[in-house]
Image (cartoon, rainbow, N blue to C red; front, top):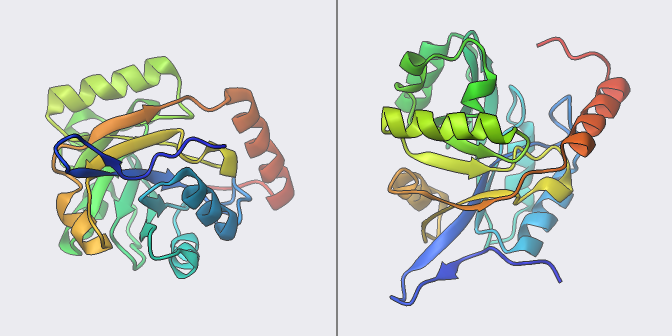
Length: 228
């Protein structure tokens, strides 16, 4: 029986929502996960919300939202490649065409969305002065090394940015390896309003690095060389 993350109720009676904000589907060129299986796994784990963040497109997020049951919130979004590194565009359901980092962050904000810098210490061009203008930092990514995650945590503390844990799942089995706890809510709009209010890392389990890399290599072979 899988462990359930879900809504963890405290002794005070207040509830928390367990969320995984960085998940890929077959709509990314380095992933083959079917949105139906992504939703099924999130429900199996008892997650309260997920964000499907395919590389530079919203098709996976749109498919997941249509498939999700009422007890699973699906945040619209994408992982965008910019001139300074990747950015998670959350609570945004329309494409952003610019790839200039500052313009991407500004456009996310102008649409009422939330920008989070994923795996910041794995992006060679991502500088502290770039990160500070975003809304949050991914302080644990289940596919990153311990050194990289430690660096990300230090950056979030130094820059006084909310920190998030996520799986960056490219395999269905990786979903939920990194999760964040936020105040309980019943809609995506409510989640958008509270997500930056004292989020806390609730699960930080590293994915198998060999399995993750082998899977990526196989998918690259199946789908062809990905020019990003």
